[in-house]
Length: 253
Image (cartoon, rainbow, N blue to C red; front, side, top):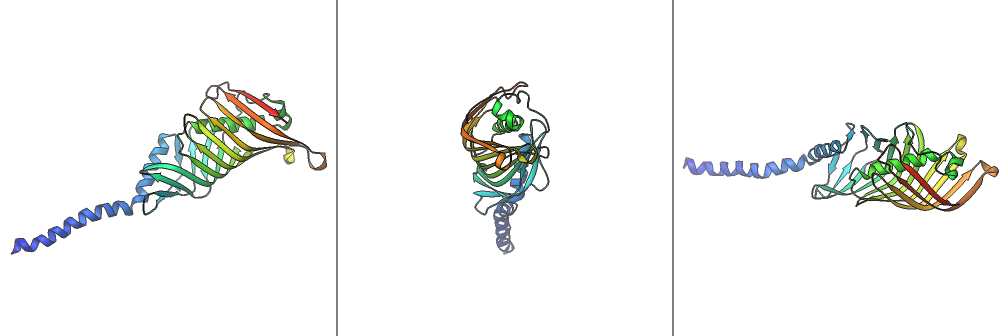
């Protein structure tokens, strides 16, 4: 009798173990996912602040990434900062896509070698280093094994100095990182006397090479004294993974 009376107790304990262990894992899914993601990011050279956290959906098919600031130990891109929560779509335990409303990239306060005197059009506006920094940064992002990523708005700074803003950015990995943007805007000089706006931008990036093309509108001056020209552009940068990159701009303005 004693033996038979223990069977329900043993069964209950077994049920708790079998159901409770997965339940505990499910309840702790956010902390587990966060820990795994931190390890993956560190393997890619990124160290994020203690705000970094993932909140997994109940079906484990997507996660929300909290705003955070991640730094890189080397390279021109020093900081990648998520300004608003981003949605990460999952396939199994792998990120399949990232949708980020707003991010900020901070470049180290250094010139890109070879990134000056490569285009008269940019020289007039004082924008060689701004364009070169954006291109060099894109080449570094191509080496980070990003999932397909959509960004509503991206701010690019050099230290605290604005470099560019980009809207509706799409990055798609492959043999090369395909890049597209609805608009990229540059401003230079006191009072924003030099302005360059790129629209319908498409291209691709690898660690050594970046190609971008689209339409461009350049203006210089303020108010009635300003001059504006529009047309198409194509820019090629090579040897970006060396100390002596080369830049070429074909602008029909």
